[in-house]
Figure 1 (cartoon, one colour):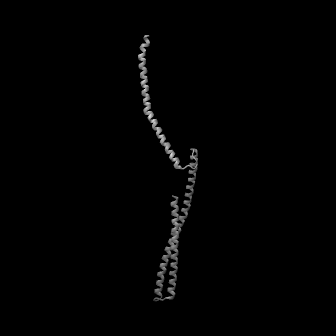
Figure 2 (cartoon, rainbow, N blue to C red; figure 1 turned 180 degrees about the horizontal axis):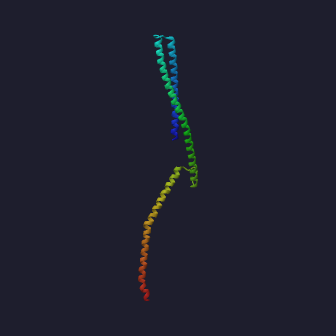
Figure 3 (cartoon, helix red, strand yellow; figure 1 turned 180 degrees about the vertical axis):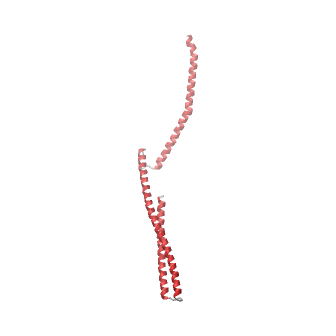
Length: 181
């Protein structure tokens, strides 16, 4: 996420440079137009002062329009620059928070792997593989317990019942004999 935000900031900076370059080109153009106007007024007479004045006013209006556009672009660029600067602060905060979270997780991970008897350099994939093996063993043990309770305990109950019946029968068979002797 912070990489995307960083890229967005870099893109905004690139846009700013391009727009400033365009502004410079337009300023140079405006200066040339102004020089052309003055040279037209001073050096050429193309039909009287009224037509020159109308041309000068027309060009001045065009120049004002260009200047207004340039000012609008400048205002936009300044706003974008302010937003980029505030984004940088936010992004730096996000980076700092992310780094702190990573450091906390890393300390927790190190403590957990050491407590589990692993070396500090153990890879998470290795631990995950061993956990999966332990889970499989636990499933097999649960199955054994299930079989034991379902089958062996049932057989033992049947055997206990048969033993009880056999004992009862033997006592009935032996009871008349022990009384006659």
